[in-house]
Length: 497
Image (tube, rainbow, N blue to C red; front, side):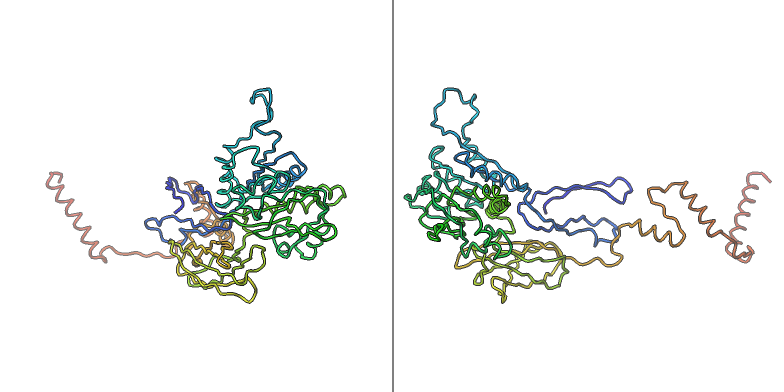
């Protein structure tokens, strides 16, 4: 039970409004049941409960960005995030370090000190995604604070690191706790390169990944990537631990250094973009009078993937449809994707259904001919709200989880719904030359008018007359005789006769 309330109905009313509040903990479709106890003498009890579904969505994806300088990359990153109404952005840009000496008190400075404790010890858990944009921890806080970032990702948060002279190896992250979190491996020697002409090239994994899918058509998507402007900076890394979505090739087609990589850590997701030239894909497009939507879409899809929006999950349960009846067989369809979002045909899928009373019912997932697709059959035994949960593994590693809620209930039979329907009664009254009077309007005057109308429509008349002699009814004759005799005896006793 989520919530219950007791109400008192103190008037004769067909309708009483009641408000109940509930804060869901998960996004996606959820099923609920609203019920009221059966009252003494209640004739119809089947309509004392109602099953319904709600599609729970995030009101906002909460994003925190820490930028090492007010660069072009910062400007266009902020532009892409602020234009999306579903993203709530909090950003810090750093113009001075704690070691910069000034000759005025802090309370008179327009540049406030970075609130280290508030961000990493208190507020970080209230965000969905953290973006480190050309930001070096060395100048601002002890490396111990990065443990909080590691814990944030391990517990389900999203982390993105964008390139620059203060990022990856250049920012000292090879020796930090983030070296095990990020999807790339750093050796502490690779640096930041400028002056090159680099083109972003999709890898096989990038062709199907939701982050880099700028257009739904595969060929059109590849062509869009080929037309994006060249980049001029690159952070070198030793290797990629996760999935490489983009490579940075030189203008002559050589190189092939990792440019965009994604991965997992604990329950969270991570992203690494090894350049601080991401802004060029917006700036140059506008300068050439073309749409900057490719840049904006890449940024927003990256944030949604990091925030683990349902559409970006690797385990997806197909539509269940409307409510089913007890004893009616149900067919569930599950699709499983690898980290590069190609179908996971060799995955192991575990399914279970949580019943109305919390009982767990395991299901067997059978592979379909189509790669990465599975089916399972389930027959509910009773009414109530159910939940199906799916978990997929590949080579001993968790790919993802998915869940959906559904309802099971008997359909109301004709006549089982006791709610008044005034519109139906009005139609009946009009068809039969009657009159509809709401119960709220009943009073002596309305009842008298109703009687007069009935008298006009169907006047009363005498259809039979019958006379019955009193002495023909023996018990009535003796009753009258007894009463008359008693009256005569009492008058004589009192001396009245």
